[in-house]
Length: 330
Image 1 (cartoon, rainbow, N blue to C red):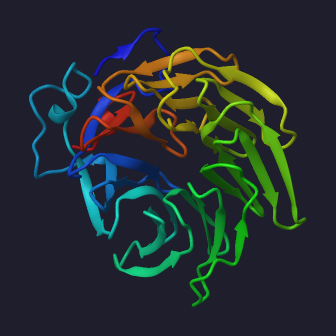
Image 2: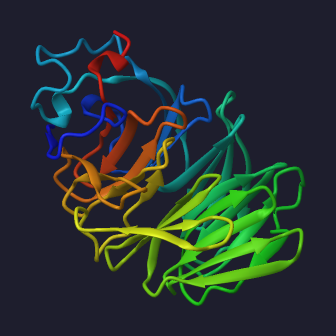
């Protein structure tokens, strides 16, 4: 659980401080709430779990080893679990907006009320598994699928039919991001498509390699490709700002990437690392070491760049990383 060289600024996670334990199968998705107070994990065990990642579970006293020591994931203190949501299929991705929990379960989009823990709606229409979901105001859900389509669902309507189907991708749609009236999708065909719903136009940007995941903030868009290169673009003019590679291993799995609150790039790796890249210089800032198999899900705190959560195919627990062990409330 140590951090590899080079030594990095204190604004980045420094060590593993807690585990999100309780799932009975690998975790495939991790996301934070808008304020960073809670996070959710979605698993192959057909459940979504809600956590308070900065609080320890009093039912499991911390071990003698302090957080940050060279300990295994199973020996880390346990973060406090808040809720468990049971679903009918393995959960591939989750998105949260206010009280709406949107889940990709097989080829179905499931809407669960966060407070009541009850299923509000299920939307079917995809002919293959759903890879990614997002929530777009006002009360619109978006899903991207292996079937090459993106479907838009009206959460206010009683109808279970999609209000629009985007069929431009030539292969599996791996990720979807939303921003005001824009929907951005990435695909194995190597193209990022930006749909401006107000203007009714689509912009296509060819990355030259199959795209596994993408992330965006108000200024930038990061695209993680199968060739092992993450490309950072200006979100507004699509100009390439930098590329990063070399410290994360790619080529076989759909690795996640995210942008931190400070704008750095966070990437999973097939060797179990989680790598932070400096988006301004294009070099590596830090490598988090702890997982023994590919890192399949990552999330960054929306306002605090020193906190991240990662999950791997190596087991049932996700890891909370922070610069200081005192991030956890004992």
